[in-house]
Length: 277
Length: 111
Image 1: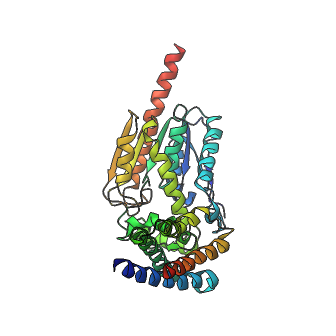
Image 2: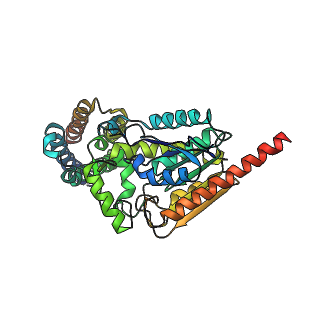
Image 3: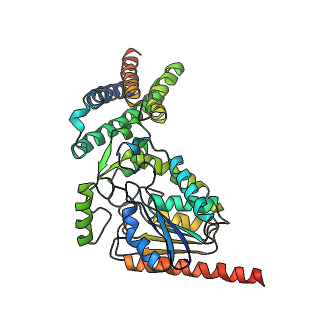
């Protein structure tokens, strides 16, 4: 069952396009409400399953971070050929891919919204020996080890957590295990992005939870401090875990994202008018 | 004395690692349920890290230069194989990794 979605305005002209990327072991399902909200506010929204996250679980073992990058780049280029304003937003792995797009297409991308950016695996849910995880991942063990999805599933809100738990058990909305090969590729991608952060000049909104169970605020702080963008904002949430789009502060996140998109559209339009004059 | 103690620890870790990794490689049906698989593989990962750590300790303690170098290759073998391995050739590289661990034990016992 495909969970990809495209929400395109047929009747009115949209303000711009928003390309969304889901997280590691996730699916576009986790972006659905966010996408719908942006669509209702005048944006065309696009979200597709990342390579390795298809119907066959084995696919995640063969995917490389370059496949994710190529996928992200080609989708961005495709949208850019059709829309003036293209924004990119993502959660977890998707946030890192959004940063990668910002690095490569700094002139073309209108803005980046990076949610729960995962540059380090250092959240509170990870075991005490988490500093040894990268060593384990560098060995053959990563192909044999799937860390089972467990409480709190990145969600602080109990009601939502129980719903997601049931959906995950059915296997309808994402993977029920974390394959270590996926983490390995995510960390490699993060290292590539981290090295180039000082070349990042695109407007960016970073949203990260103080209680993120997968990756601490260190990731967002590293991005915020090292990028060269003059237009940057970091918002820390205090009542959510990793899945900020489903947790207690989701409305706040949606509204902040919309505020960011609208404000950066205005800048573009004013620039266009000035050029015309 | 430190060399002898390190040798004993390294050989013990390697034997345990060989047994557990052989089980995982040749009897995969035992580990289908990832929830049961998880603690077992966490232990295996820990043994790999211990193998690498005591391998480095032995590299330092072994007095002869050429033996130090051979030991370093064995110590780094999990990283080298980890870099080369692909999902399609997983079985082959698993057997190769087992072979390296067994060889390192024989080497350490002989020197």
